[in-house]
Image (cartoon, rainbow, N blue to C red; front, side, top):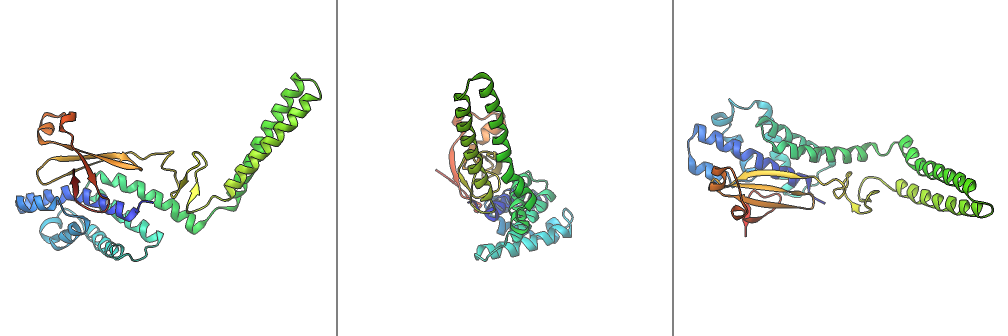
Length: 274
């Protein structure tokens, strides 16, 4: 199971780097510092923004964003020391990250939004549980569907076939459909928060939505110190990174010769190239 806090902090670092670099270039005009910032993680970026708030960010951001940075630093320290974070704390972390990324106009807020919605579904199941009426409907619909199908097939067999074979086949069909209804109702009754079997593909999943049935395609763009860009795309099962060279960016096209595979580690700010 992926760590939503680690994913959120990684997205925060990716989204804050271009903004912090632009402010440093605008105020300090320090190219060496800007190049160094491109390798910082989320904690280093938040500490820098907190310490240089009056010089760089006071006129661009409000005290609301400053409060978000303070709270995120506290949660990040607790997470780094492996303190237990409840689901409500995880939701608060992701919500703060999304708000801060929206304040700096970063597209990474869309990635964090998907993590926040998934966390909200888990939080809803954890605190409210399964509504009794919905649970009753989930247990009832397999029998209604299979019963209606059995009745329709029985009518067709009786009309087109002669006795006693029509009644024998009708009985076998009814027993088979009721067996299917019983198995489906049993599966629905065991569904709840935590690891469960997906009702569509049958795989064991740890999230509310099955990542195999509904893959989430992500695209990210970060920059390294030499000015070249990294384009990250993939699904929930993995990521693929391609390095776009400076010449390809100038020409507006990127062919296969300009793509170099790499490896990225979640929760870190650096990118390792093979």
